[in-house]
Amino acid sequence: MPPVFDYEDVQLIPNKCIVKSRSEVDTRVKFGPMTFNIPVVPANMQTIIDEKLAIWLAQNGYFYIMHRFDEDDRLDFIKRMHKLGLFASISIGVKPQEYKLVDDLAKKNIMPEYITIDIAHGHSQTVIDMIKYIKQKLSGVFLIAGNVGTPEGVRELENAGADATKVGIGPGKACITKIKTGFGTGGWQLAAVRLCAKAASKPIIADGGIRTNGDIAKSIRFGASMCMIGSLFAGHAETPGELVEDEGKKYKVYFGSASQYQKGEYKNVEGKKLLVPYRGHIEDTLHEMQEDLQSSISYAGGRKLAALRNVDYVIVKNSIFNGDSL
Ligand SMILES: NC(=O)C1=CN([C@@H]2O[C@H](COP(=O)(O)OP(=O)(O)OC[C@H]3O[C@@H](n4cnc5c(N)ncnc54)[C@H](OP(=O)(O)O)[C@@H]3O)[C@@H](O)[C@H]2O)C=CC1
Ligand SMILES: Nc1nc2c(ncn2[C@@H]2O[C@H](COP(=O)(O)O)[C@@H](O)[C@H]2O)c(=O)[nH]1
Image 1 (cartoon, rainbow, N blue to C red):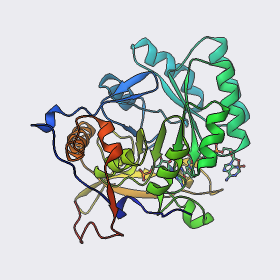
Image 2 (cartoon, rainbow, N blue to C red):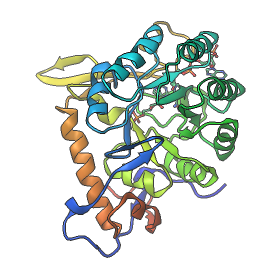
Image 3 (tube, rainbow, N blue to C red):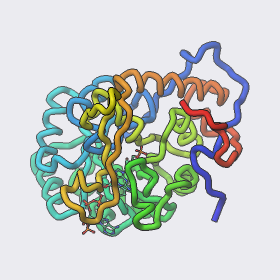
Image 4 (cartoon, rainbow, N blue to C red):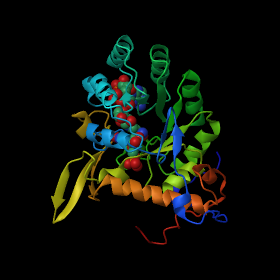
């Protein structure tokens, strides 16, 4: 097994700066048929994304993936986004009724720009079958599949026809998979991203475990094209988790997609609910992420995202924060 490490164990090493101002640095990323402001997508979870936020993100140059938990509304959601002149990006599962959605879309010639197959254990025949079905019925769609945590998983999903794979089994903040099953990439997610990216011939999304803006730069360094983020977005006015107040402080509810709160029953639960401090408007956070990434790229000695890919790094086991926090 190669060395494993996580976000907090790594520091990237600066190169000579080639820009006069960080404002010269370009953080845009081409992902599938479109180009986005930053390589970040809010998690396709019910407390992170809803239609209102999806519209705002699409209108403002950000990628989004709608969650799959309003099952019956997805076809109409695509139509509404297209009517507004915006791209449509939905999630799908693998249960029998999901095949009916694909059939309906094909029959009515409604083609979302992006579909994400969103399953806990994505390295499975059910996902491979769904990839093949979607590619046969909706060949123009950019298809993301996951989640996986191994190079073998990436290769099999790519070979089945996925255009991108999503990497991360259990590193999420609302995740208890690592505790309940003993499996996953929790604690070594960044190393898993690296291994998967080396095996990939198509883009990968680093999903889960991102706790600071600097982790976005680290994900790109280790091969991700896009970062999926839940907890860092959960505390905003625009994210749909419930707002609660406790002893004069504001919080937003964030729960896992495999939690009891999502499922409505305690069965195969692999997610939990937590409160995340309220932190204002998502526009400000996205702006700060972009500024921080511009700074990261300047430290890498470049002016585009690609500069991050080649920087050296050191592994400094759990010591970079020196007891500090944001
Ligand atoms: N990234 C991560 O680490 C994780 C993410 N999640 C999120 O939770 C949500 C629910 O996921 P999921 O439970 O897959 O979705 P579903 O509840 O839609 O289950 C999809 C299908 O996969 C089966 N299934 C689920 N887990 C396994 C497994 N470990 N082995 C074999 N079959 C399995 C289910 O059957 P049955 O339920 O009968 O087994 C079902 O038929 C998703 O949004 C997912 O992204 C959940 C856990 C981990
Ligand atoms: N094991 C579980 N993972 C989950 C669940 N719901 C979502 N997720 C994953 O977490 C990331 C977000 O991670 P974060 O560290 O940024 O908060 C999300 O994109 C999913 O992949 C769950 O119930 N169990």
